[in-house]
Image (cartoon, rainbow, N blue to C red; front, side):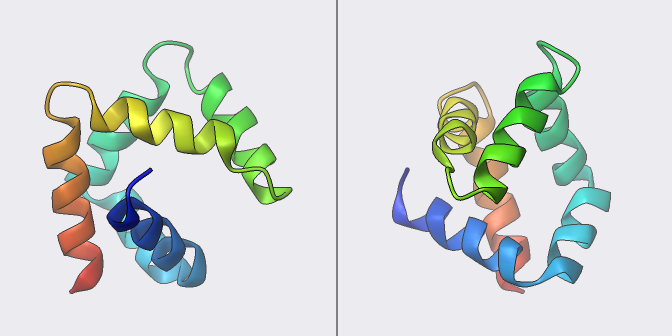
Length: 85
């Protein structure tokens, strides 16, 4: 995972209001669709549980897959810029 993505995850983890506004945004909804489309969110739930217990590997892998998907890097970039505002 690159440094920008790590920084974004850290910001979201530290400020729940930013996370809530992200989830409610169009880009947040697009990200959720990308993360849940293959299995209705089962893998995302498992990854989130693991990350909450201190093992972010599965969540990191999911974000990297999004980054390498068509439009994924652009989407993550827009989210990163929105979080910085």
